[in-house]
Amino acid sequence: MPYTTILFYVLALIIVVSAAMVVFNKNVVHSAFSLFFTLFAISGIYVLLKADFIALTQIMVYVGGILILLIFGVMMTTKVTNVELKTKNLNTIPSLVFSIGIVTILIFVIFSTKWNIRLGLDSEETVTQIGIMLLSKYLLPFEIASIVLLVALIGSAMFARRIKD
Amino acid sequence: MEIGLTHYLVLGAILFGLGLFAMISRRNAILVLMGIELILNAANINLVAFSRYNGLGVDGQVVSIFVIILAVAEAAIALGIVLNLYNNFATVDIDEANTMKD
Image (cartoon, rainbow over all chains, first blue to last red; front, side):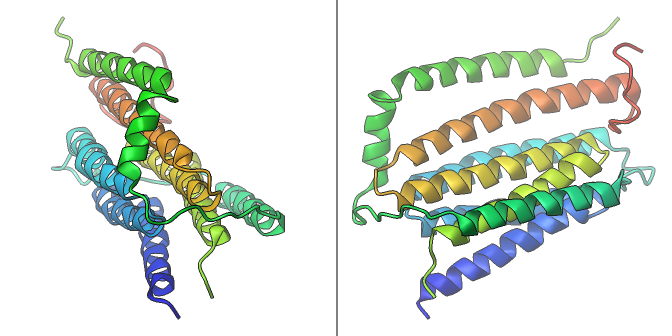
């Protein structure tokens, strides 16, 4: 068995188990810390798919940015003094059945589709190609994304401000 | 057995299912946000896997960069809304917050 196969199964196991802990854990702080392992293992999956730039972006943006923001949100919105950290679920059985049904349909579709697989050239660096594409083919989405980020920054700062009256 | 495209797609499907379950069933708004992050990551795995296995270059990776950008914007805005919700209702339970104005 090649070592990439073992690595894929280890990473997939980490992803599925820690994502399940995010979803099923009663404690919100534990969920946030389980999300840490999920995001790191997903970055390993990107490395296996030879997408090194995406893997680094995943670590820097998700683990370093979004996760910290989420933990901030957990800390600021739960009363730590009272035991309010535990949350209840709603409609567990119907939503479980619904989710499992959708996953079953998806897996059935994945295995019954005839995928047209062609492997590209392996030994190319992706950073150069991504940079060229961002400034030629995807220039307009790139500029729009920068405007979206600016608007989101201003908007979230305005939202989170405490309004005194 | 060699790892192929279907392995990655199945992994993405399972991650999507877990995120969907978190979005539907959890009542804490922050956990709903974590479910959305899981779903976006599942979509990203699919995009990068297709980009690897169709031999056409790095188009899928560029699109997944845009997904990451939008996820950041969404997380910032949504956490601002959640903080505002907590200031107004003193809870982040999305069942309690059923009025537009208190």
